[in-house]
Image (cartoon, rainbow, N blue to C red; front, side, top):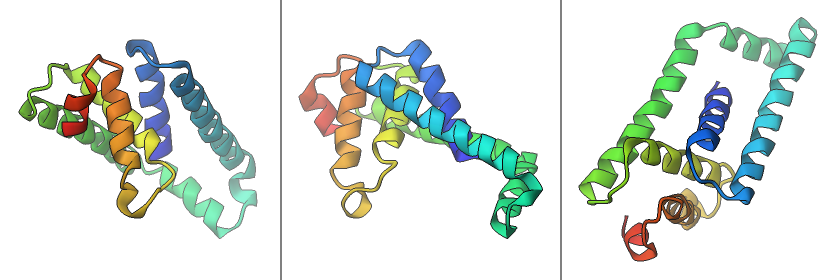
Length: 139
């Protein structure tokens, strides 16, 4: 469910953000992986083992699906709130795009607690909106 919401958020980010070609390629790769996983789930359906059947049942729970999307929105609002508290002059849409870039940047865990990868992805996301590096690093 999180992968579906993140894929939708990424596609929306491509429509509203000045993303680099590398980020656009990463977005399309992730969307392709999620789409293949969804097609695999559909194809296996009831033929799969217990794990596949539990995944299928999970997708039928619309409340969990909505809650998963709400958590993504809450994370975007948290980024926006911290940006406002840090006196960064970026809007709500930019905060959501930066949050999505950070989510992509930390999909594959790095050092303990994503130390370094989280900061790099944050600086990268803020640089899309012209935030100077020193301010982005401080954020």
